[in-house]
Length: 310
Image 1 (cartoon, one colour):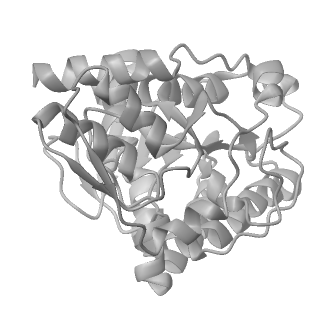
Image 2: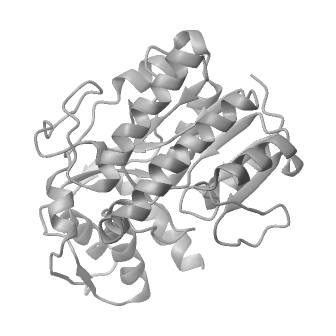
Image 3: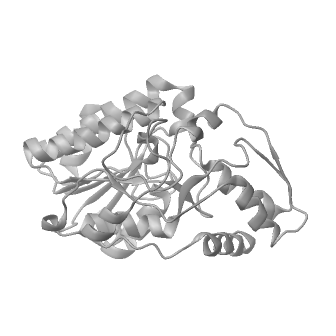
């Protein structure tokens, strides 16, 4: 599979801000087009509102795009504050990308999904790919539809659409993007700064997580996987480890003994309660060799090291 001209939507977000440099280092800067509705400091930047069909068509056609990493999305907490915008961006935006990809003969469309597709009726431990997906947030609802739309365009039209369900992502390079798992990044940053933290989730809210370097490697491995090896398309579970806010607080006190956390759950607690505690990533391991490198201890240690360096 060739990657001659790569469009990244949502390039200024948590994943996009790190994926763009990675793609540039692999394929060359001239092959990567970062786009977003908010300007980013990059000479290659193109403004793109994915809900504007004509703009999507024009950008893809004019630049002869053959690969798309469609990262533009409104996340869980932000989506609950603006459900209409979440629907427009997450559903209509994806629909525009898929239709334009068909029209312009795009070779590959990557559409990351999320643990937000799961709901209260989903099993809590070791959740398989095929299970109950009945989410309680507009974010989750739109992402279930996104998975199904992607699979439909593959099955009906032969468009090469692939996706993976990300857990909470930890990164020291980019700020949280309005998700329910943002507390983990915020807590680590506060500890490094020598400040205490007020957590918006309960102490025992266990959730699956992943360090950004593993998240980036995962999406690249799936993008480059042989099509014949894929039995699934848009719904691969991926996760590295799970922990609770209390466990993260305890780990941080190994580095900062005086660090304390107050727990003041808000509306995001209901979102976290609807999500599973751990995922079964065996299909990703079998079909495209998913293999995360960082465990919980290594992730916290590496984040602290890099945050202190900044």
